[in-house]
Amino acid sequence: MKKRYSVGSYLAGAVAARAGDEMSGPALMLAGFALTGSTADASSLLAGVTVSAAAGGPVLGVLLDRARRPGRLVAAALVLYAAGLGLILVGLGRLPFAATVLIAVVTGLLGPALSGGWTAQLPRVVTGDRLPRANALDAMTFSLASLAGPALAGVVAEGLGAPSAVAVSAALIVSALPAAWLLPARPGRARDAGAVSMIGDLAAGLRVVAGRPSLARATLTSTVTCAAQGMLTACVPLLGERTLGGAARGAVLLTCAAVSALVANAVLARSQRPLAPDTVVWAGALVQAAALACAASGRPTVLIVAAIVLGAGEGPQLAALFAVRHREAPEHLRGQIFTTGASLKITGFAVGAAVAGPVATWSLPGALALAATVAALAALVHFAVPSATAASSADRGEPAS
Image (cartoon, rainbow, N blue to C red; front, side, top):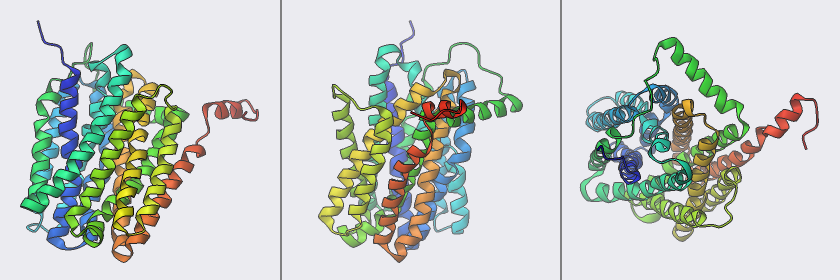
C-alpha cells in the first residue's frame, strides 16, 4: 500500500524552502553591500529578486491549479530558484551590476512558489477539522524560517563571507525538493492549459480577489505592510553597522522579530477566544507601525525591543491572512489566490526595499520613520475597502448600518 503523505513531511519541506528563501534576502543584501559598499546597490539587488513576483505569482497559480501533480511544478520552481541564486552569486563582481540585477529579476518570478504555492497544497495534505490547526502550523513555518534564515545568513556571512551565505541559502531550498516532489496529486484529470483558458482563469482569480471584500481588505493591508517590512530590511545593514557593531549583525534584528512572531502565534493558537482574523490583519499593521517608529530612535536597546514588538504584530497578521484566504478562496482557484496574494506581498516588499535604500543613505532615521508611516497607512487601507454589508447596501441604495 502506498504510504500517505504526512503533514510532517509537508512542514519539514516548507521550513527548509522558506528558511532558504528568508536567508537569501539578507544574504544577497550583505553580499551586495560587501562587494559594492553601497546600500542603494544592495537594496537594488534585493528589490530585483522580489519585484518580479507580481508577474510570476498569478501565472504560477494558474499552472498549479491545472496540474495533475502540482508538487512536481513546485519542485521545479525550487530548483530553478536555487539555480538563479547561484547565477547571481557568480555574476556579482564579474558581470555589470545591471546584468546581475536582471538575473535577480528573472529568478524572482519563481518566488511565490516557495510561499503561496506551497501553502495552497495544504488542503490536500490535511482535511476537515484538522485543517485550521495545520494552517496555524503552516503559518508558524514562516516564523521559524524567518528565525533561522536571517540568523544563519548573519553567522555564515560573518564566518565565511557574504557570498557563502547566498550559497547556503540555495542549498537549503534544494533540500526541500523531495517533500515538494511527493506532494499529493489533484483528484481527477489535469485541466486544459490552453492560452485562452489560462487568461480566463487569471481574470477569474483577480475577480475573486477584488470582488470579495474580506479577501480584498486582507490582500491590500498585507501588501502595504510588506512594503514597510521591505523598508526595514533595506535598513538592516546600516542599522547593524551604526548601532550593533557590524553590518552582518543587523540580521539579529530580523531574528528577534521572528522569535517574537513565533511566540505570539503560539499564544494566540492556544487562546480559548481567538480574535477574528479580519481584525488581526489590520491590528497587526498598527503594531508594526509603532515598532518601526520606535526603531528610529537609534539606541541599541530600543532597537531590539522594537524588533520584538514588530514580530508580535507580524506573526499573527500572517496567520490571520492565511485563515482569510482559506475561507474565501474557491477550490478551483485556490492556488492562484495564494500565489497572487504572495506575489503582491513580495512586490510590496520589493518596492519598499527599493525606496528605502537611497533614503537610508541620506537619513537612516528618516527611512525608518517612512516605514512606520507606510505600516500605519496599511491599517487605514483596510477600512478603505467597503465591507460586504456596505457594498450590498450601496447596491440597493440604502445607507450602510
